[in-house]
Length: 316
Image (cartoon, rainbow, N blue to C red; front, side, top):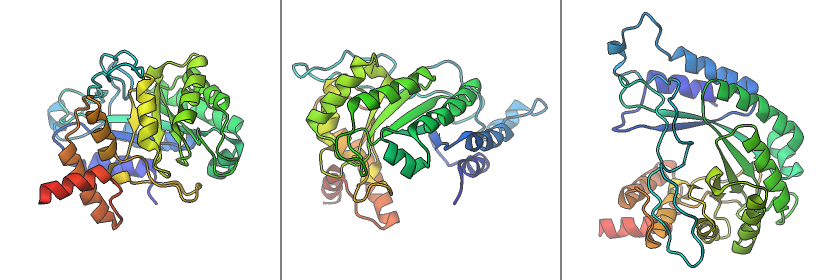
């Protein structure tokens, strides 16, 4: 199985054809993993003797100029409450990790992973929460020294397959705050099992905000195991969250959470947001075509209801 360094080396050698920038996110499990990734990263950098004109078609990741954090809008809208109409969400700006001579520019980001329960932490990363935090400190420190954005994930935030459906919101808030204090640019709080409900999502957000965490520093990541992902996303939207994780065609799952389905489908989430008057910058018809294509390529059902409905209309 290829690791992150192998993938980055392959991308630098054989960059995919694209009319715009591509965002690459590398989940690194430990410091050694990041060091291996950085060796591939450095190998792609142009040397002083290289002529910049010869780099026109080379996708080499370079140190980015200052820019908004990953997933953050250029201008954050006011928080939405249950009595307000959703604000336009806009397209998330991307860090430019390349010289003007490189076309197209691509973005690179490092991710670190923590669990909100001890049992899941040991099952998934073979260490305690405290040990996992120590690992993350070293990874974050090295990544930030290289001006690489870092995203944190806190899994099983709304229920654990080992410890039950009531993960303490205070524990999630404490871990999230620790990641932000260590310098991550954004924390994605994840309902890995799909056990989350609207009341539980409200309680979790209440605990996060009480810990002094801003909605601008958060993303929400909902799996749709019990069909509640869109409901929970709307709760997050009403509380000022503007970044949501999703997967085209509802792909994904979790090997350590039996029965867990994929993330909320991108097509369903975008359709929901558009129905609320939000502007995402996503072409829903094109996204639906992609969902249908990748599902067919992988030989698995297309789990997006909106995507299937749109494809049916387009093909009729």
